[in-house]
Length: 143
Image (cartoon, rainbow, N blue to C red; front, side, top):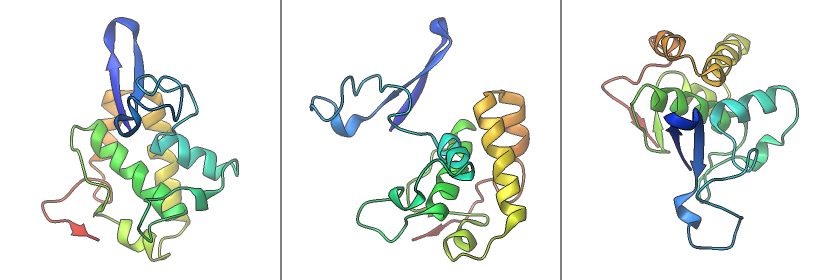
């Protein structure tokens, strides 16, 4: 999914380039709200118990479930800071999350990240991104 902002309408537009020109969904060039969740939206829905985390992942990989939602949230934060990552890039505590080795402290940090991403406040987004667990380092673990 790609998301871009239309300044004159003060809104974000989501599109799925993989399905453009197909009939999978109506208007893949401007996806309806809720049809595709951002990392922040998925994390918040997961924490509220509204979604089945086992339905979130990368087809053809073992990366599914809550850890994948965690990773996507952190990748979305990086993207909001103009650092685009690949689906298999890992940094910070992502590897620990995929191994089930993070705890409530990391989830509470991600609660803050999700709320800040949803708020769409550039200053807060830049500030939380400076957390060492969230900033993309010079060296990545690729799985």
